Amino acid sequence: MLTDNTRPGTGGGTTIIPNAEGVATIYDPVREKNLSISRTIITFGIDHKNIQGKRWMRLAGKVTSILTGFKTPRDGTITSMTVQSGIIVEEARSIIRKNDEVDDLYMGRLSNAKDLVVDDLNVDINKGDYIQLFLSVLIGKMDYPVVNIELAWK
Image (cartoon, rainbow, N blue to C red; front, top):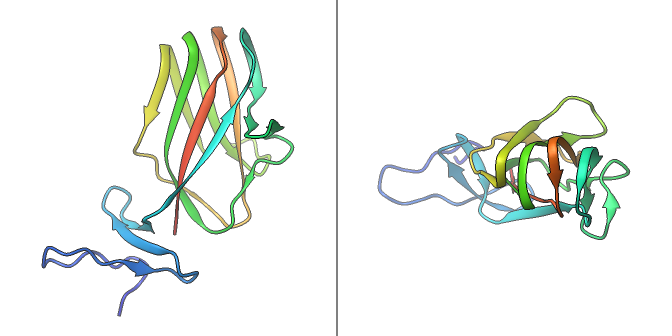
C-alpha cells in the first residue's frame, strides 16, 4: 500500500502518488517526504527605490502582506526562495513569516549582493496559514526588491 512517505522503488522507476486531495506527489529525497510535482510561486515586492529600514513586502496586486498574506489552500512545504534588488545591497534580510506571528520561518541574508537563491528550504506550512514577507534593510538601500517563494503541496 502506498503511504504519505512511500519511497521510490529500487527498480529504477519513480512512483507518483496522489495525495488525499488528488494532487500528484513524488518522493523528494532532499526533504525526505512526498511533495507535489507541480509547484506554486508566490511573488512579493515593493515598487519603490531607496528602501531603508523595516517594511512588509506586498503581494502581487500591491496588497501589503501584513494585512493578508498568501492564504494556503492545503498543507505544503516552502522549498525555495529568491531575492533580488535593482542595486547591490550592503546588508539586508528577507524574512518569511506566517499568520502575523513574530517568529521567523526563514531568514535569507543579502550581503553586498543584488540577489540570493536558496533552493534547499524545508519549511512546512498548514492549510489556512497566511504566508507573509518582511524586509529589513540593515545597511544601505534596496531598489525595487522582489522575493519569490516556491511551494510544493503535501
